[in-house]
Amino acid sequence: QVQLVESGGGLVQAGGSLRLSCAASGSIFKINVMGWYRQAPGKQRELVATITSSSNTNYADSVKGRFTISRDNAKNTVYLQMDSLKPEDTAFYYCHVLTGWPRTYWGQGTQVTVSS
View (tube, rainbow, N blue to C red):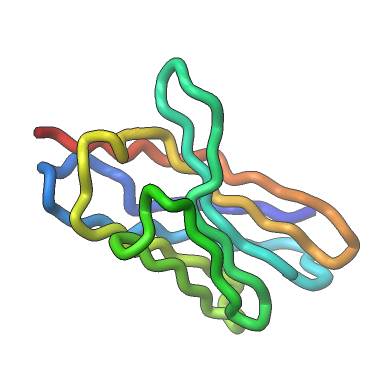
């Protein structure tokens, strides 16, 4: 199985930045897609950004121009650079991995809180 460990969450003021990291380890066959989802209290989980093994990216409209997803295939790690953070970005952020077996995996999540 695959284990995902997330880090980088925290509390920042509006306009600030955070960088989330998610490292995958374990019996990995092939990682096709890595991404980030988030869920705010009382709301459904939503896709934030994804990146394929060939570095094709996809972003939610709400974060375009502010967030940047990247990956280090050699380290099986995905990053989410979050700039110009807004209070509405406050949520629990989850790392997601889709392997070529295929299997899907989720991280434990990390809290991001943006104060006004």
